[in-house]
Image (cartoon, rainbow, N blue to C red; front, side, top):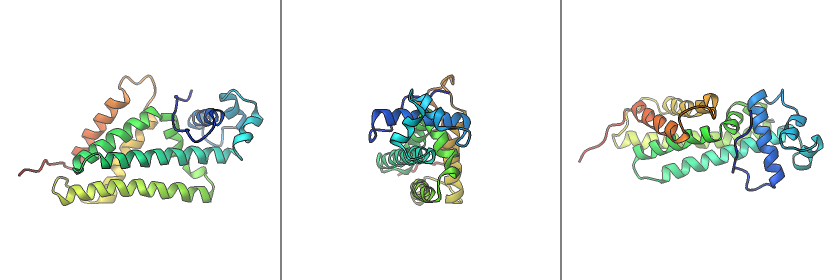
Length: 204
């Protein structure tokens, strides 16, 4: 699997960005434990020693991928929430944009979502903090929708988990051969999300 082009690494050198893309492809294809630093270096067109010029360990590479991926996701969600004062529009934008992100960055997204347990305890704490912020943002939109009568939600936590699961699953099955575009996938999931929360347009 080759990594799709990514613009997630503006804070690192071009070579480090190539290593991160190569690591994302290798981790997504083989898993963290089965991937070697030699695999990562080869994917970036470097010698095996090249990894250690930019990263302290294979786990450090995973952490940089995870942290940057979660930071990007959190910013995307915050922008979606800020895009409208109406909860149903916020939810539609959030689910659409976040689903499309998982398709556009499918290799990185697979690593971000599924290789989390292999982080060191200290790094897991930092990434978990961002995961909680993502969940809190989704719950906030749901809470606002219930308060204004637009949504029917019995349990905010369960509903947030269901919505995020729909979004995250895109990275599992998406491939460049899929006929639908990331935008189309996002639109489909946004419509599903509104039905899931029982969206009812308010009147008056």
